[in-house]
Image (cartoon, rainbow, N blue to C red; front, side, top):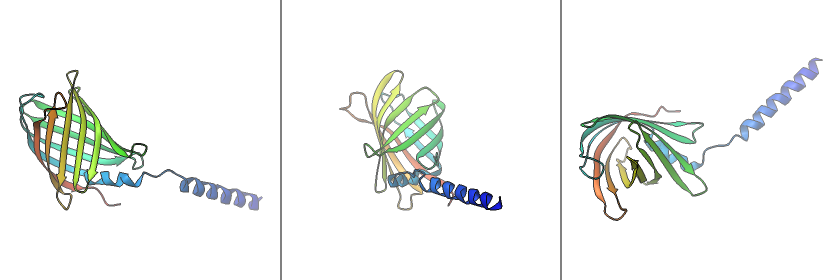
Length: 181
């Protein structure tokens, strides 16, 4: 009887080990998102334009990898002349199209959907903001310093996809890097 229990235990351990070895792993490209992981503070200014009157803002951006490291989740709180907004961002690598997709949802009902490109020390969001039922083309590169602990962003917006105007300028500082594993 003891031999059967030992045999069953060994088979169970072997099965668990085999299943763990076959568990899916994030695409190596996902590691590029790790540059955003951490607690960031920022200050900047929205420029007057099609999205509103503009004004100075401050904010915090907290990003972490979730769901087995396949996705980046960021939560942001921003304060400025137009009040306080919060948002939730989810970024993921699409292995079929070989790009990153980015979706952002704000507490004022606006939504961003687009792509994220990472080239060297530049991370660029490009896509469509839906604000008040109208779509606006948007692009914003964040250029990180060599140590990835700070960066500057300059966003542009277009109502027609042809004429682009400045929409945002800001400076970001990573106050707390991601925990080491």
